[in-house]
Image (tube, rainbow, N blue to C red; front, side):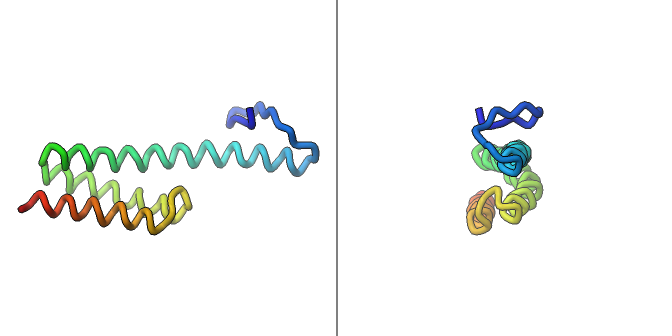
Length: 99
């Protein structure tokens, strides 16, 4: 197993710098996984509100989801164009609820 955030790291690395790099990767992976989970959760809340047809709830959820998506794009959790596309598509779906 190539590392955990708890400290124990089983690795194939031989040099000290490679071992350190493995530890850093394990820490960054844990952080990125957490950020990705948060982002997906906020998007899921928006999509559930849209599915129910609750425009007000969708707008409120979108106010939280948009910054999370853009932050994920800035931090290279997802590509920035992917983040923009998700925001655009969700916003468009919310706008269609008003009609």
